[in-house]
Length: 380
Ligand code: GMT
Image 1 (cartoon, helix red, strand yellow):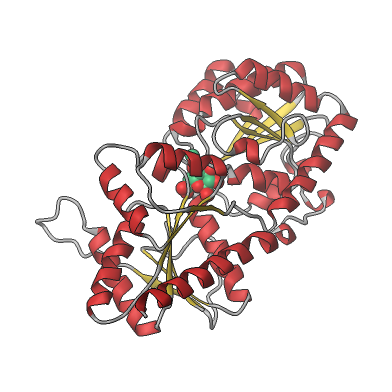
Image 2: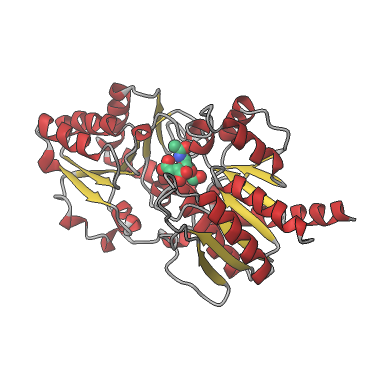
């Protein structure tokens, strides 16, 4: 199939999922066209069947806001025609599903039928999309998509609860390429980061308020009072400065490393003992799955789709959002006994195989085929 993929090209989970999906589909023989404003961060290799088409939005003095949707829908029209793209898969409803529908209508005028698959990722539904200023457009574009997927049962239920949706929503979860998480513990250069006696605790995100970054610092503060430990904070975002200030206030700056953005997530996870994800809301928690694939147990909140990934008492523990004390106690429980830690690490790794890329990508392929067939049949 010739598939157009629209996504945010940044470090966020939706962009990562879209990129990894496109790359796997290309390995399976499909022709993949990424259409977005920058080359996606995880897309380092273009090849004969992986293409990137940049969306440019020219500045003009009259524009207070640059009309990205307009530029994107025009680019989609051009690329569908030029590369005979058969299906468009848009990741994140805002504004991608809306722009794709506009492109579809423009192409219809020229006798071209292009089905649209929309994948809902989380904040496009639970935070941003739900805002009254966006809601009518988000509802409209979900209902006008030819197929809709959500990354967890929880996100599907949230979508049905918050919007007036007439379409079916297929749950196709986030996934992981387990072959990429094969670093042997001895290759990790753990010694560069911590003493042998110290446990390494890690958090990776875009440091937005929804990640409850200050809870992470407080949990770590409690942990390091009980056992030798270091905290690895990976990512960049609006809460970083507050987190650094809190570390200074608590006198733990020397035990916390702020990495900023990193392309070496697998290496950092390889030497980690525990992953913290106390988010306010999380449709799936791809970062937790990446940790688990590296054999790192997860201390998380029990919100959204996280319980579908992290199994309480098996791969880690779940607590109510904001319950820093409970999360701290659970972390200390896992870290304070070597055999227990080993068991949790093993369980986390085993659980990650449920979400292996080879189990999940065929579900997207099947959906594309079904959607294309329906779309062709509707023309007859
Ligand atoms: O929250 C993020 O880190 C970024 C965000 C995004 O849209 O890029 O992630 C969302 O999509 C991911 C991939 O489907 C999910 O794994 C994350 O749970 C989800 N984030 C939230 O729901 C807050």
